[in-house]
Image (cartoon, rainbow, N blue to C red; front, side, top):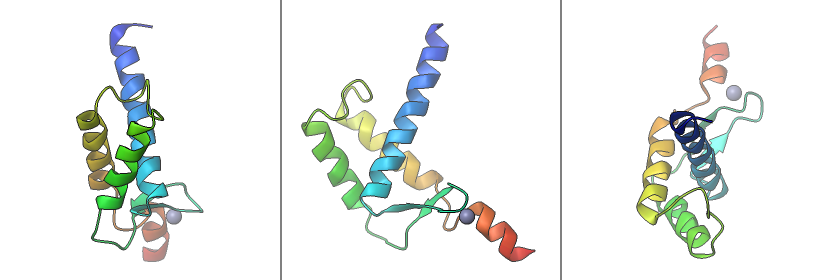
Length: 95
Ligand SMILES: [Zn+2]
């Protein structure tokens, strides 16, 4: 695997792990029908960072994130990229 491909695979993995952390923390929600991730109705995003830090401290994120900043950046990105609702649900409702 080339360096770039490996980097892309790692970024994809980081994105997935960050998303999962935010879901576990109740900050993001995964649509049960479409698998899309969207923002749960909460303004407080700190539980996601707290859970991420907890996992990091316990070595659960080894091999995924090298340092905490990388992890918190990924969580931030996951939250920012998530819509307010599942895009597919919104689409079907609009039709
Ligand atoms: Zn949906």
